[in-house]
Length: 77
Image (cartoon, rainbow, N blue to C red; front, side, top):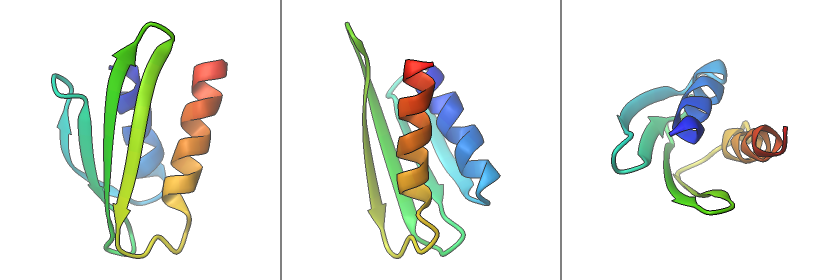
């Protein structure tokens, strides 16, 4: 799933550590530099992928918001 690969690249760019990525399930889990946990799930649909992002803990650098923005730009570009 391209969205998982793109998410992994963006998260690593911001210093996050990807701890689990399951392409078959369409899920990813990462630890943000602040220690917060970010989970992503992606489901393929006719019009593209539907992505859900959740964070547990502080995301002071706005990594989740930036990731969401990057995924939207990647989908439209």
